[in-house]
Length: 390
Image (cartoon, rainbow, N blue to C red; front, side, top):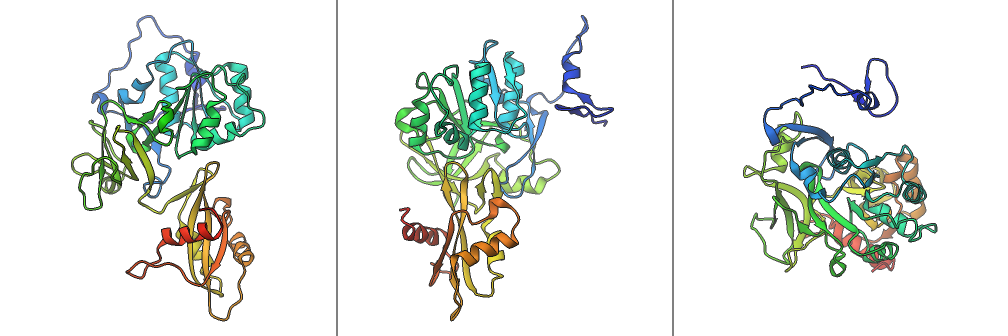
């Protein structure tokens, strides 16, 4: 099979640019190619963000679920996606702009509140999809005003949670309620599983389940749970999923024999069937849109000769996500300061998102579970209390 490459930006000799295709005139007798397998045919391959383990190549099937929730779009709409094409949201923007004939704005400039506000003012954007931290960046910008955002009819945001106060502040700049739409999903689903269409009484919820998608909350023992009971969120698309490209083992770890995809997210449904996300089963953390493991930082700190024990955890904020913090126990007789730990990490870890942005605390001991293992959540709670954050 010959693979044909098409690039979206720039020119490479021998490679087709997307603009070349747009400028090609269709012949009068043109007929679209007929494909086998219908909705089970592979449409795209996207990379995961890492929340289900190491990043993998996710196959996306040809399904109406990708564009059907956006049937409200029309040729008068102007779309802008502040997410890359290898994210589901970027793919959704690409497909919906083609299906519904909208004008799509593509910017080479990295996202900032200033650039977004400028684009809205210049192109009168009506529909946009952004990462959740961008909502806080816009709402807290000194430049934001209602006039700049007056053209917006739909703001979709996904990827993390946001503070209710921030959403209310963002709402104050919008022309009416129902413009802010929170979306919950994952790359493996290839679409949004739940949407919150601006319910003012449930701003902290990720919304209601979409059509033709099933969800359930499951306990650690595998039992289905009822309303207001917390457990892992499982999703069922009701159609074939091709899994991870070239990685059948990874698929078997995420999707069970009945077709349920285990998201790794913990949550619950309230009595009105609104879904709430409360955390992750795994210990993966995300800072500035980059994934990291606490253990990666712990292993570096543990190399300090003065260190007896160390526990790293994330302190969440709505701009950056989970900023790393550390509680450390010094060896008997050793003098150790927080600055020494900060400097050691800075010298031995080059990545900014793995730095201890949330600080260091020197403690006499770390909270343990009954099995003797460090209780990361309990250590985190002690850190928050000591620093006056709870």
